[in-house]
Amino acid sequence: MTHSPKQPPKAPKRKAKGRSKDTTEVAAAPVGTLSHAEARTVIVGLMLTLFLGALDQTIVATALPTMGRAFGDVENLSWVVTAYLLTATATTPLYGKLSDIYGRRTMMLTAIVIFIAGSVACAMANSMMALILARGLQGLGGGGLMSMTQTIVADIVSPKERGRYQGYIGAVFASSSVGGPVLGGVLTEHLHWSLIFWINLPLGLIAFALTSNVLRRIPLHHRKHALDLPGAAFMMAAAVALLLALTWGGVRFAWLSVPVLGLFAGSILLWTLFAWRLVSATEPFLPLQILANPIVRTATLAGSCCMGVLVGLTIFVPLYFETIIHLSASQSGLALIPLMGASVIGATLAGQLMARVERYKLLAIAGAVLAIFALGAMAIWPVGLPIAVTLSILSVAGFGIGAVFPVTTVSMQNAVSDRHMGIATGALNFFRSLGSALTVALLGAIVLGGIGASGGVSVEALARTASEPALAYAFRFVFLAAMLILCFGLAFLIGMEEKPLRGPAREAPPPDAPATPVQEPPHKD
Image (cartoon, rainbow, N blue to C red; front, top):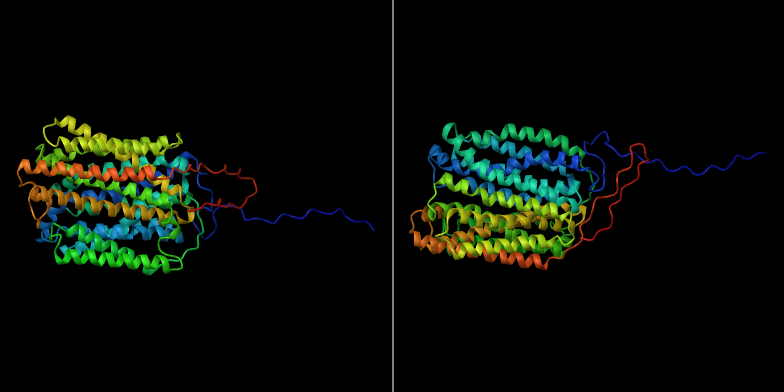
């Protein structure tokens, strides 16, 4: 009897990587396996989506007076801006958490659809109340555009190479900050105010089609998470109460009035309930691993300080140009270009250098120091400087502040695992928005206090009726306060741990090679 030679055991068949029948996203792949050209294709598609949200925040401003006259309601006009701000800020971390559960593509497309629906509702509004409600709906979609873009960038690009793409995001915000008011003024003056919302329909549909296509290229990670609904509700409600207090304080009501103090008290109570959910929930809305991570804390605080100062400058520097340097409204808008353009250059340069240097934190520290000295110069000489010198100083400030953003964003994302990337990035943008609101409220209170006003109307209206010496005195302290806020940001940067940036993953196997399961390397939050 002959025996056949013993055959080696057959390797178990593995399902080849690729697209399955019932999903449109590519199977899991390690971060950074896309080539630079492929990653750029995805990111260019995302930029149009991001441009929708960024443009909407600036294009509306110039159309507000026309909207008020059209509906015969000027008293509630500020709610057109406030409604969007409240819903967009409150839902930002929610999008991040849901994207960790259901995927980035699903949540990005959901945000675009809601944003388009809100835009159409705004354009068709026949009363001020309908417009305000539609703006709230639009904000529900807009809240996901920024955080989803940054999260998807983190999915496809390794931390070491991620910084160079931050310049694209900065360029989108800079172009919308400059072009939005101009476009809004042209459409409102020569055509109809509703076109500032109708324009989002074709742009949104293009963004949906393009984004839906390019997001098929990104990795699909299966993550098991539970959504803590009470925790999410407490966090969003606390943010809304705080933003309302900061928006109304000193303008609609006195800071020590019952409505404002009641909102602050309600916000504190809701934040307390949110903290209770953090320690009592099985899986809290913000994972404790993220909150306990010192890099996440310091990077978020540093970024919030710098973002708050930049937003504050974009609001109050045009007012400074009009009242102190006596530029027209259109000239003030143009004079803002050096500040915003320099911030994009600073972000782009710092992002490019992050991939080439080991001590990348020094880039942000140097930028913060530059901005501090620039704003200190503006505080010392708020009047009397030639316009060219003033623009140069503000350009230095913008360049320095811009250099901080890619470092803080990438450092935070480098410190958390992929399974928490969505909620961590959403929380970063959420606290940046809160920091911006706090800074704007503080600078507005300084202007009102400097000109001896008690509020009741907008800061801009009061400033244009004040004397020049009083305004010079007020803006001296505006620049000083901005400088001090940046000093806090610098302190957080110095205290932030400089963790080595993770580089690209191994090269993908050739198409005919047997597929191997991809395992995420162990990584502590």
